[in-house]
Length: 633
Image 1 (cartoon, rainbow, N blue to C red):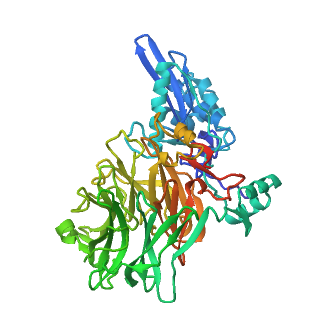
Image 2 (tube, one colour; image 1 turned 180 degrees about the vertical axis):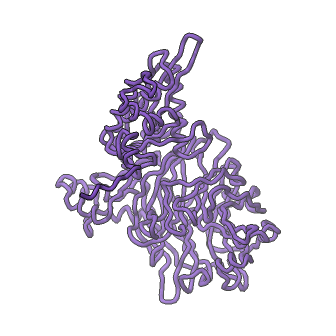
Image 3 (spheres, helix red, strand yellow; image 1 turned 90 degrees about the vertical axis):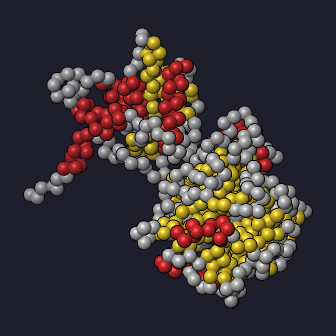
């Protein structure tokens, strides 16, 4: 008889692991992400105060004091046991920085149990009942990963922050002896529809009569298997119409503050390649409140935004409020030299240029070439560079910031691409450039200011969200000096990149800009870390597929002293697409453009941004920061 194949690794794993499917690496798309920690703090020689904490990415789940005298290892085992009980019947990632608790789970706890909780020398294992309780609790989750993370790190990624929060709460509850019990969120994947179109269509076809009446009451209409928002709330306008010989790419949007004017820019091209770019085009729109839509002038070229024998690319506008001036930055690229040719040869062919308008885009100045006076000899170390694409920003202190990226030549004849900014502190009279974002290699980027909602703060942070050409995720960095220097770039795994990367767009605004919505008090209550309305809302538009340029979506985040967790995306354009560029226009209104065969722009009120396609729901909903589900109406 043929013997069964023997798998030594499987036998060893079975002998040491309390469950065969227990993972050491994070599960994808878990229901729960928990962090545990314990504290055993000696207040006096004769008094040891102890407590444990379980937190998630957003809040404290529970934290309890344990009997005085409880030692650190017993506290850690108790915390782990409670976390597994809370994760019953769910997929959970549980993080710890405890070597002891991690070892009990993955290495020797199950061995102790099989030996009857005695050592090889015959001595009894301490805390055997706590270990047994933990081994039994490990069986409760549907799927489980227990992951070791680094302790006491200053990193700003969500895992490090969650672990640090667990440590802080555990110490507080041990010292105060006051329990904290906020409970688990009902779902970690609430925010935005994640169903495939076919699945969503089936779900909506099976809607109850009551739900269908709710759609109709909300003035939605049924089309192609979906309940769609009313045309009164969503308007689509093809701003740049493709014809047989011309197409438009690389759009940018700029709202003129305190006005009803929106400026839309794009490159006109004679074909799909970069070298087919020709001239920058503009369409100016004026918001008509009675129609709840923009009225657009005809598209027209900005003829002055050119250098002879150069093609104009990457429009990147910014508004200077003190002089009421629009700056339109762009790069002028010599002849038909492509970006790849410049990178391969190490010979830059791009120049840094801008034009200005003091009448909201009706007329434009001649081109100003800043290459020598701003970049100077440094350009000899760049194979090429670009601004944007997208839009710039003006900070509270008046500084103008233009996102940019450069391909820096290396000593090994290679190049690396880095994000950075150009900035001006004198209303655009002169310009400088800052340091590259270090760490993860990243290129095309956009920046927003955060901390805008905190009027008492002198400092406004700059948040950079950049394209990663080589990794699968977006890169994030912060600047405390207005974009001159940035923290080391970190991958944000909630924001995926397609192969080769793709440009994305980001905007931010104070939550107080939507103070007219009914749920505004809830937003402040559940998302701000202080009693004031210092919360900022951040919206990011990008392709949501990690495999191809498909499914353009919007992610949402909040900032109140620190960046929260990004929501899952709301897919606003299923199927093939490219990048999105967003700009705030009017209070609480969002403009997005989608690069498909045409360049349509979708205008919608922020309170209507979630369409009538929400899974199993009969209302329009955002979940800000992933903390609380509410209506924006």
